[in-house]
Length: 121
Image 1 (tube, rainbow, N blue to C red):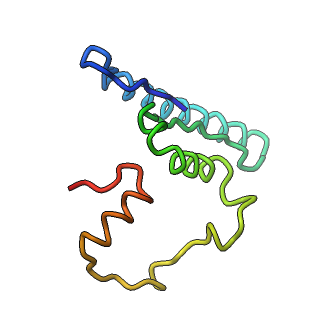
Image 2 (cartoon, rainbow, N blue to C red; image 1 turned 180 degrees about the vertical axis):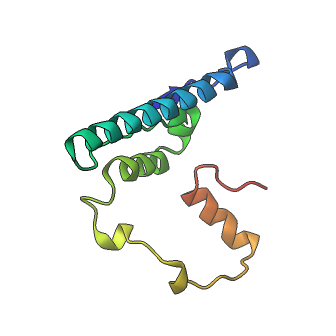
């Protein structure tokens, strides 16, 4: 987890290349790790034991303003659905849904409650 300080001025901003370089490094490490694991597996006939590194960039202001959503997303990312009641975290498959237009009066409150970036309008 890479927690980014919320900038108060333009001079406080982290360079976009910083987060890009961190992400590229993690991808590189995952690629190297995968190659090493494949080599070990071919030498020993072993199974898939490769571990993957994940990197999550999180801005401090998002943590403070949307803590419940961020915690939920991190919990799912780290633990999966374990320990939660199935009714609360069950998946809804597309074939069991109906797509229809909704008005802004319905969409905006839903987005404010359930999405990190809220409604954009």
